[in-house]
Image 1 (cartoon, rainbow, N blue to C red):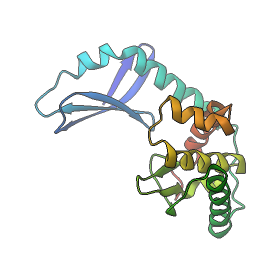
Image 2 (tube, rainbow, N blue to C red):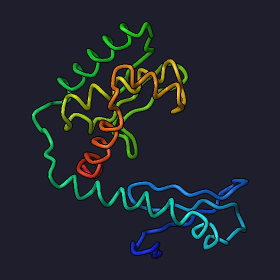
Image 3 (tube, one colour):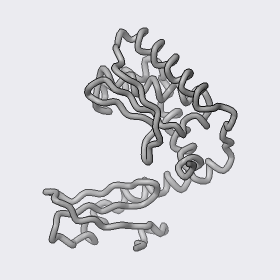
Image 4 (cartoon, rainbow, N blue to C red):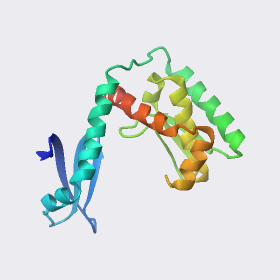
Length: 184
């Protein structure tokens, strides 16, 4: 279904789950409303968070437009990409005095990378199409999670010790997402 938030039309999906509280998520430009079973007052939830929805969807629309001026790099094969990621991960983790348990490269639907509590790092294969500086940033971002699990103030402080302009990198990653999200 579609809803109107100020001057923007927003694609919306409603899910009922075994949750205590209703919440909103925006994934790939779609507003997901997660509600407890039997609760249907999503209009109230949308109205309460209208400003937040508008800001997020406006940002996504702006990034989609910016993505049209970007080009993907198809020159890297899987092996050279794997070597690049492993080299960066080894150097970054060594410099930070951290130990990575295992690195996996796989296709991921909604993120560039992840880090488990066991020290396993997964990197999205679609990252291989991006500029090398963004690949290095994502590896650094995930290695930092070995030390601090959550995206809290201390975490971003750790990231900013190497990338003081990390918000620029985060925006660039968001822009490129629109170019690679549907690639095989």
